[in-house]
Amino acid sequence: MPFCPNCRYEYRRGIETCSDCGAQLVDKLPDEPYVAPPPTGNDVPIARAESLAIAEMWAELLGEQDISCRIAPAGVGDTMLVPGQTAWEVRVAAIDAVRAREILPTERHEVVPAEEDAEVADSESMSRALRWFIMAGAVFIALMLLVVGARYFT
Image (cartoon, rainbow, N blue to C red):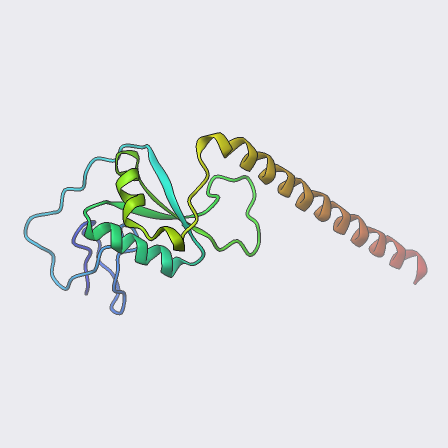
């Protein structure tokens, strides 16, 4: 069975990379456990990929330069999931953000907005959620009218 040399988790056969840290799995764990740097709790998004495969490739590039990162669905923490949203964020510790941005190919990724743009992004997210809520209410009312109408006309 393959193991992650960093997290030390065991995986099923056929899986090649760790789903938590993105490391290449090995057949046998090293004798000394890997000591990951302590989490800082202030990881920042440095890039947004349109597919998980691209985000994993970027994570591998960063890992080769000893920059630990994680991949998260874009918009995690939003109050509503938007159907069809397939973007992924590559996140690193704030201390490594500048170096990580230099490593990743700039022409192939969208940089996540800065803190100043957070209010704009929040308002766009809220208006999108409001549109979905209004649409769901309209569909509910239409269905109720159909049900009530069917009872009286049959």
